[in-house]
Length: 202
Image 1 (cartoon, rainbow, N blue to C red):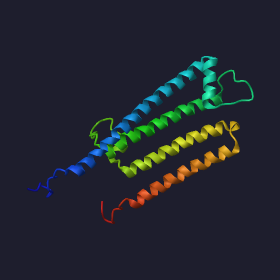
Image 2: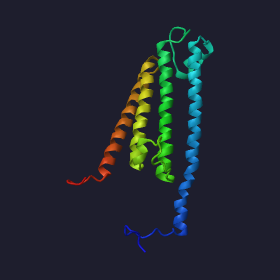
Image 3: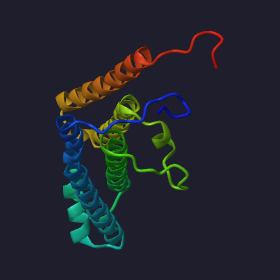
Image 4: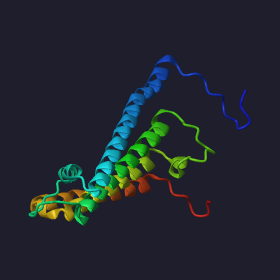
């Protein structure tokens, strides 16, 4: 008996297709691993923020840690925080946040797309982009996020340009441009593959 829409009820999958379809759950440990990586980033963020606050209070040990972590070098001895060090540390913190956002997109979007529905419809905290996420949308969003992360790294390099060779500066700029062109190509390819409505259709 057909349902009111004229569709036959779904028949149970045969054993082999059912096994193949169930294999999607093998991705679950991967997403759980990314959640663990997210936790590591949170700890790293809080530690770097703590070192920044303590260095601002006058701790030379915290200042030494920050200078080492950001790769800052100066011809004069560094005895306290300056604008460049603060800017580089803040950019490093922003970098952690952007990578964390990328992880969230991969974890939530990837699980929703490739593993199982999360049934977040109507939830007040449902991400706006999740309502229409698919593999193509996820690729474009990930490419955009990677460009943002690359931009932060490039800005950090230019601020601290005296400590890098021209070869490194040119290479990082070329890599960033490559990311940008790749994202544009992915978005253009996705647009070509998306069916366009005919004239008169709404």
